[in-house]
Length: 98
Image (tube, rainbow, N blue to C red; front, side, top):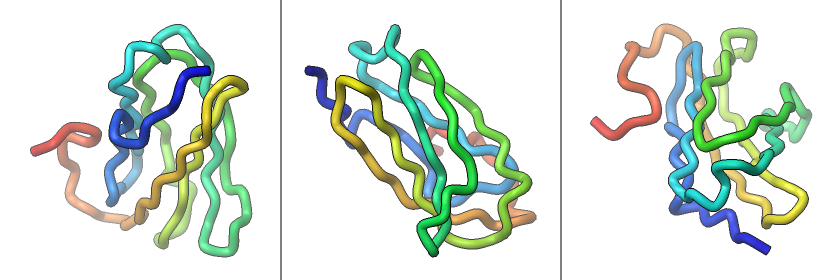
């Protein structure tokens, strides 16, 4: 069973309209990962599935605030990451270190 290592996942801590998820572990290049985004009250705001090591999710509909994104698959451990949605945050190279 592959381990979804949090150090191999890059998710920015502050987002505006888009959040980029980058998985840097090639083990997951052909596997489906499920995700859900929860708000501070643990309510699911969005959920879905993607395949591969990179995805952009539009989060314009989310109100400003703090959220958690949870990644999981049927054959890997869960990983959770915190991020903050700030409207008007200056666009940058999301998902990549500056």
